[in-house]
Amino acid sequence: MTIRMPSVLHEMVAEEMNIQIGEQRNKFKKGTYLGTRTAEVASQILLLGSADVKFPQRFYARYEKMDKKSPDKSYAHKGCKKFPGLVIEVAWSQRRLDLPELARE
Image (cartoon, one colour):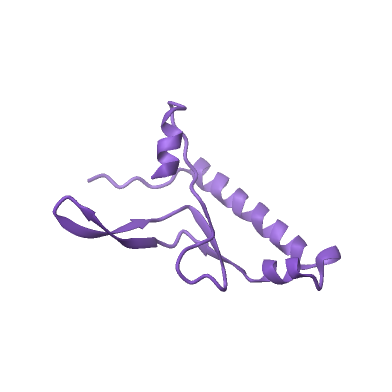
């Protein structure tokens, strides 16, 4: 089994998205939003990085297996304990038609 490490381009894209989301979150936490519900919600958004997301068990063939994904970046609200509210997966394909299937996975 070959383990593929993310490319430099892949990591750059994922990290730049993370920076942009963080900067936007910080803007919501201060300035004109200071003291508003928006600032309160923004301050409770947590960066989960690429931590595994485990889904309830499903039947695969004749055995049960925990479905697990490791998104490039994910974010959750402090009040949500089960799953992240936003996941980001950086991917590209030589065939444009493959991307919807990659997203569904």
